[in-house]
Image: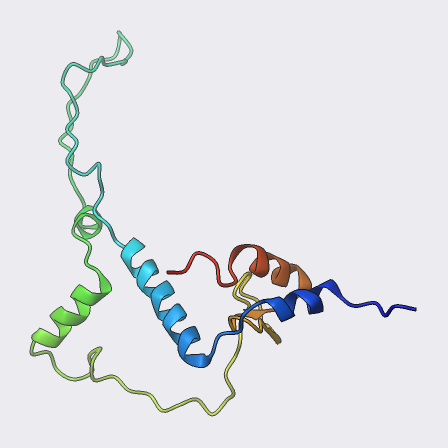
Length: 153
């Protein structure tokens, strides 16, 4: 009588397993890719409305002209800085010490908390090939289908 094996066990033997250095390189590349996606310039910031656009105001109401005022929030969003620019600005200024570069905290007395790479809930399990954390069989399936050692340079 032939013994039965789990499909997951059979598949795990075929996959390659990364060492710690490769896992760190992969994590650094993922963070760099996320940083490149952050804070890009607004492509519609310089658009100007045409004066030939029809106005759809009611005929019995007299249109009143209001001067548009821009709040400080508009300028904050328009001239937003990246994290690297903020750190560089903080380093170059002669600010008094508690600043970003001088802030320190002792290590936590508590053990590290681990969170699922798929859903963000607390996780108890680790993917063998890549070292990512997952919390359930459903998240493991999602991780294997979409994240595990895929789409990395």
